[in-house]
Amino acid sequence: MQLQDPLLLEQAQIFKALGHPSRLLIVETLRGGPRCVCELQALVGSDLSTVSKHLSVLRQAGIVTSEKKGTSIYYRLAMPCLERFLSCLCDIVEKRCAARQQILDDALRALRDERRAGK
Image 1: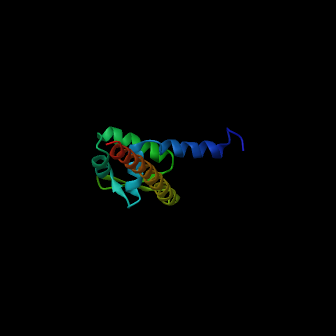
Image 2 (image 1 turned 90 degrees about the vertical axis):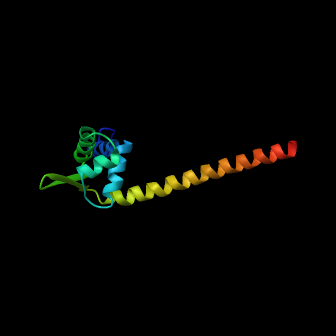
């Protein structure tokens, strides 16, 4: 594989699209099923044009698809494998956070013990 390999470039585009907290929040929400733009706007807490731009990035990367129903546009995940990936990623992040919290708890406990011994 070369750096300019089309497969690598396409994968990079997907990761780039996922690289914004608002877009990750949208994708996480869509794991639960299709949502209309108005729901996603309320969730993200940004104006409609900002949410539309985020959705456009996700759509161009092939992560989501849209369907118009009446006057509303609904989005859904187009990559079912993202569910497994994000679930795995969440597990890893939760374990890292727990390990960091344990380190902080141990350090705080040692500091308190040190202060008690010094009194």
